[in-house]
Image 1 (cartoon, rainbow, N blue to C red):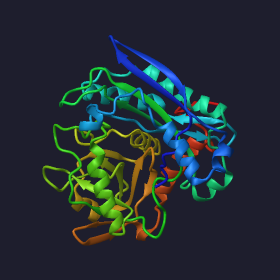
Image 2: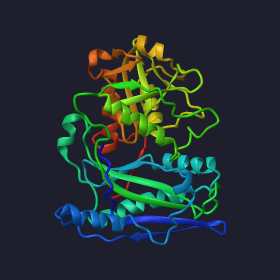
Image 3: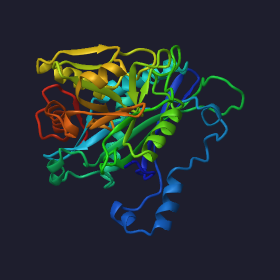
Image 4: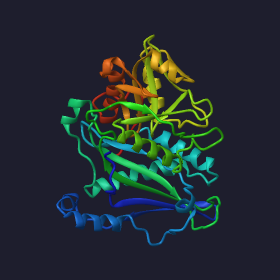
Length: 362
């Protein structure tokens, strides 16, 4: 996995108090990007620790004690013609607002969210901390390309008893990131016995606590030799819901593209919505509905997962109760490749952004 605790020096921090949000940009200790790259591992670790410590924030709080928090993930992509641009940040702003409402926190204004995401990337880039375009990425359809990851998240005020957060912090940090999945000998998935989300729960919220089960299931899948795991619903144990941290699509032999319908157990992915729109533009029948594991194993021609980190990543097979079914003879399908290449092309600026999805930063 390409995520690493290597945060850029400029961060944004806001605090809700007395009925309003007050924000500031902080510049943490740093050298130049080149100087930091030349540092020893011990020196880099010391510098990174200093960036990620905030002595003026409470350690004991409703987030650290009970996981009461939510977050977002979006990327600023280096553009072929130069500069950086963020993919659909308005949608992340809206989802972050809904997540905070769902956790009974005072929601963070969408306009301020957008400004903070753009400005942290811009200020870090001014210090030399950003990812530059590399034409070699085009050879594998940007599957191993780099970008700037933007992570907005909440942190609760100090507290020890089980309670809600009435005066949360919102932080926005930037880090470099590359491919989410390890592209090695396996790009297969397995159905896990674990349950990600239950009805009337927080599965529709990008809540931090949701990812504990996902991390456990993903680790078990990796240990068993798979790249990804897939969750079934909690009630019937027969309907596909999500991957470990991504939505999932199935392109059927009939030419229909299906994906599990949204509800209170499934996260409304932004890449998911974008793929649905692109597929319908191509005249493909797209259905958001219940998808049984039996239908998937019998009728699927191609399969891929989607998300900010995953993009549109094909799965070669799915194993359920010891039965393995390969999709498209284990090769990347034509439809999957077209959707993947279109999304990546728009994001990295090799295709025209006719949708107005990209927000320019520099």
